[in-house]
Amino acid sequence: MSRRAVGHNMPGMRTIRHVLVANELASYRESIAAVLRFSFPDLEVFEATAADLNREILRVRPELVICSKVTSLVKDRVPNWVELYPECEPISTFCIDGECYPREQVDLSDLLALVDRPVVRTA
Image (cartoon, rainbow, N blue to C red):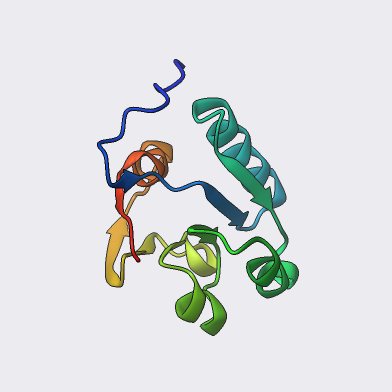
């Protein structure tokens, strides 16, 4: 797997800089976090259990959360989130800049694409 280029953004744009990975099972969480760290060396990736999700949102203030069960705090405080296979169901929910939609058969490339997309800078 090759690493992505750093600093490829246009002026006035930024990429996601902080990601909180809090999905279950722990092995999936650790694997997703490891791939994100490898693919985006300048990205700060944090891991948390589902029980610690809300506390870590307040501490880290991530721009993207990947979790198994979205909480009201995630919905209120995080601009981009993925509810990844909640309760082992085959459909995940993506919410990007306030627009939410279901996705089937999400794979790692879908998550990498979220991090790699430019985000409009807000004032």
